[in-house]
Image (cartoon, rainbow, N blue to C red):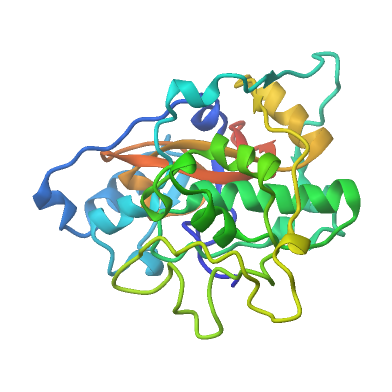
Length: 300
């Protein structure tokens, strides 16, 4: 279901936002958790700051969200050190000449999945979406397979190895799941049913779905619908290594710290201006560039 994910449209993040592999967790009071996430004071502070580089507004998709509900969408948990053992860190040759700007949508126009924006509903499943979206793109880029893989398979069937499902997870575990267990197609195991209400998008609750291991279509076999990743690895946090990985192999999954002001993002190159830490969010990174004001940014 193509819809509003955490972003209304393509977002631009200032280069330093995701260059670190760590992020902060947001701890706020009960009173604040029950307050509205959208605040006129934040919009005013951002829009009156001549150095902000971006514009803030009341995003309609968050008009009825409390701070607590917004925080629940931010599903990247701090990764336990043990999960990183044995996971290689990939670097790229510094002699590789990278373009000043790059957009995977233009580089691989035959791959329609790159430009799709998906809806995670009210579930903290961004860690799963970022991984599945990037893997779907890479199947098209490297093998010419224009397919959509199933977020629901990963979310429901990875279990505690990936974290807590709709209450957050570990991106690196998602990629390990692809190697050892594979992932079925969205057609086999859709995130939403035909009414849009049997999986994590349903209000008011957002439970982690149960692992069924059975395709919704009777003529499809679960095991025959599985697609595997050859390996799982991390990218060196140096921006040039991240750029080289995207340039050579396709979109990547990244995580970054989200602050209150990000919920008000409208346009421009985002960087934190005001507000408390809300949590960690995962997205698919598809390119980079430089704004007219000389700000280097990521495209997600």
